[in-house]
Structure formats: structure tokens, C-alpha cells
Length: 377
Image 1 (cartoon, rainbow, N blue to C red):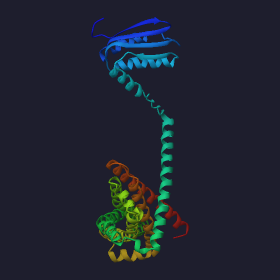
Image 2 (cartoon, rainbow, N blue to C red):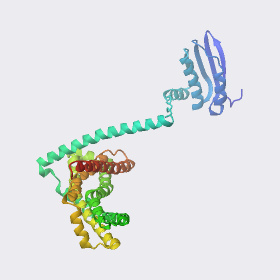
Image 3 (spheres, one colour):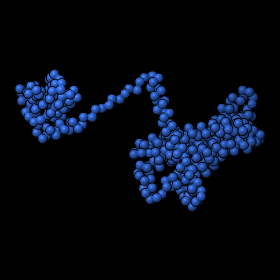
Image 4 (spheres, rainbow, N blue to C red):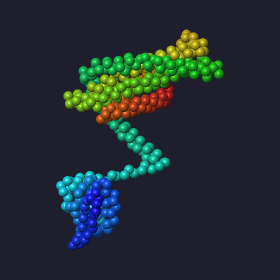
């Protein structure tokens, strides 16, 4: 045999199958040695003795070939032993044995309808689990809010004022601009349709009812969900990543009381005010467009406005605001507490908070619309 080749010999000795190995059992010779050893007839239940005394070099490939063969024969009922190696070879064989952890193949998901049903089922399960956790968080927030109501001194007024400035005062420009433009669009699009029937004056009704009852508060809530709800998640999530919340709990502080309540109360207080601003700006945009496009002067617009809507049209929109604010703040804070491990999780939870908050706001708005229609408001 050449010095750079591995070899093996098979012999029978006193009822024991002896496999004598020698030479270089390394990667260069592994394929050939593997093919040769696979051609050895299975020993059945006979004892098998591997003698590796003459093996000059044993690397991982060679050790795996020996170990795998011994393992397969043991599984078939044989009693297998490997002897004669030096300390380094024995250690390598033990390492290979210790790391023999079969990989479980991934089961294909299937195709067509099966895959769609599986995805829908997984999504429903995830939504159910998230709903249960969110209800639990809601109960925790309400209980903390009631405890703070009994002991008002526990409320952090400085933090409340700060968050009122962040979510309310600083949001005035974007809310005013969007509401004004929505009023312009409503009046312009409505006038182009109403002119066909000679009913241009009813553009006032269209703008007033749409803005006061629905669009004013709904668009404001969506803007705040994207602006402030995401900020709540990012702020609390960053604190979670940096273990500041754990430190807060170590100091005996309640994170719900310190972090959630000021944000929630700030949004509940300021969102109705933002909704009021949105109503005014929406009507202003609609009135300006009606004046320019239809020639309806401001005095006629205001006069028609008084007959087109009642005070309930205004209060319907305002009454929705605290509920929307509570939902947005709760979702934003909840998702912040769900952040784990890394900045990537902060981004994922922030995106999720915005989507969930907007979804719940629209669902709540639908319930409000049905409810007010049923009671005749």
C-alpha cells in the first residue's frame, strides 16, 4: 500500500469480525474508504472489533467513516468496539460521537389550498394569542389607573405635561394641514358631482357632515397613531432593550404607572382638542373651496352650515376621541413592552403598533357609526 493511502483488511478471528485499519484515514481518502467499508457484509449479531493501531493520520472525515459504520452495525445487533488508537484519535472519535445529532428535515408545507388554510390558521392563532395578551394588558392599565385615581399624588404631572406637548401641541401643524386639505378635496369633488343636478349648495352639507362626524376625528386618530403611537412603542422598546425597565422594577417602580399612564392620559386629553382643530380646519378648507369654485360666500356657507348640521354632529366626533386615544396609547405602550433583544425587534413592534392601532380605530369607528345610527343621532 502507498504511504499516502488508507487501507483496511477484514478477517475472522475466534468468531469475531476484525476490521484492521491503517494508513491515512483523512479527507483525501475518505470517499474510497467509505465505498470499501460499505461493501463489507453486515456482521449480523457477531462481535466486531475495529483495530486502528496502524492508522497514521485520522481526521474528522475518517473518524466519521469509522464511527458511522460502527453505529450502523450496532443498530443491526452487533457488538462493536474500536481500539488501538492513540489519545488524539480516541478524543476525535468521542467528539464525533458526541456531535452525532440527526437533523430533523423540515416537512413541506404543501401546496395550493392546504398552504393557504395553514397560513390562515396560523394567523388566526397568532391573533387570538395577541388578543388575550392585549386584554390582560388592558386590565392591568385600568387597575393601575383606578389605583392612581384613589391616590392622585402618584400621578407624574411633569411627565404628563411633557407628553401633552409631544402628542398634542407638536401635532397641531400636521393635523391642521391634513384636515384643511381634506376639506378642500371634499368640497371640490362634491361640487363637481352636485353641479350636474343644480344642487351646489348641498356641498355645505357634504363637507359639514363628513368632517364633523367622521373624517375629522378619524384622520386625526390615524395621524396620531402613526406619529405618537409609534413613538410610544419606540421609546418603551428602547428602554426594554437597554434593560431600563428591569432597573425600574428593581427600584420598586411600577412601569405601567411611570411609563404608560402619563402617555395614555396625555393622549386622552389632547386628542379631543386636536379633533376640534381638525373640524375647524376641515370646514375652513371646504368653505374656501366653495367660495372659490362655486361662488358661495362665507356668510352663505355659515348660514347653510347652521341648518345643515346640529350640535350632535359635532359632539359625535368629539365623543369618539377619548376612546380612540385610549386604544392608540394602549396599543403603542403594549407593543413597546413586547420588544425583545434587539433594535430589529423595536422596528418590527413599532410597525405592528401602527397597523394594529389604525385597525382598532377603524373598527371602533364602525361600531360608533352603527350605534349612533341605531339611537337616531
